[in-house]
Image (tube, rainbow, N blue to C red):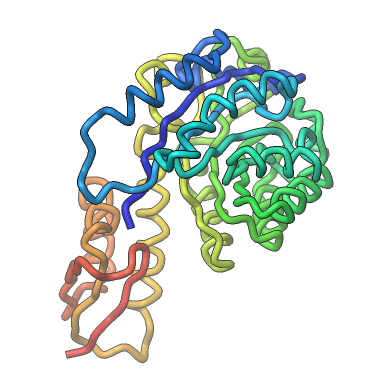
Length: 338
C-alpha cells in the first residue's frame, strides 16, 4: 500500500496557551506565526492535487501541524476544516489529520472533529510523568493524556501520541515508564522526539546557565531505541523517531542530540541487537542464510558498515550469508540453515 500524500499546513503556536521550555515551533516547522486562512488552504489543496502523481498513488490527507488545533476558537477551526470539506465530498481528499494538546480534547470536541472529516488526532503527550510535565511547562498531566486518548478513540478516530526523551527532570527509567504506560493505552501510532535545545527557547537559557544538560547523541539513540522497542513488542506503530529535518532547523539548534538521520540510527541499533541475539542462539545451525528486508539493507549495515564490522569482529558472521529479500518484513531478521 502506497503511503498517503500529505498536504501540510502549519499553525505554529496558534491555539496553545503555554510556551513549553523546549518549544520554538517557528524553528521546528520552518514556519512563522502568520495565520493561514481558509481560502489559502483551499488554494493550496487545489494546487497540490493538480501536480502529476504516480498512477498507483495513495490517498490524499490534509494535515494541520504545529500549535494546538482544538485550542483555536471554534470559528477558526470551522474556517479551516470547512475549507477542506469540498475536497472530502468529491473524494479528492480522504481525510484530515491534526495535532493538539491532551487538555484541549474531550468527547464533544472529538465528535465535532469526526463530523468534519478528521480521521487522525495526534496528541502532544510528551511524558506521562507529572513532575517532568510541570518542569517542562506543559500545563497538563498524565491523567489528561489518558482521558484524551480515550475520547479520541471512542469517537472512532485514529489516535497518535507524541513522546519526548531527555526532558528536564526526566530520568531514563522515567522515559521508559512513560512509553510503557502509553503502550498499554494502545494508540494507533507514536512519534518519539529527543529533546534538543533551540535558540530563543527557555531551555536555551537553562542550558547556558548549566541548569539543563541535554542527552548526548549516543544516549539519545539508545534511549529512543529502547522506547521504540517497547512499542514494537506491543504492536504499536512508531511512525517517526527524531525531528523532521528542515532547511532552517539545524542552524537553530544550540545543543542536543540532533542528527538528520536520527531515526535510521535508532533503527540500525535495534536491528543490530536483534541480529546479535539471533546469531548468538546456541540452537541455530552453524551455517546458513540470514534474511533481512531489502529496504533495511542500509539500516542493517549501519553507518559506514559499522554493524557488519562489529558482527565480523565478534565472529558472528562465520558461515553466515546475509541475504536481502524484497518481500521480507521490515525490521525483522530470520535465519535459514543450509
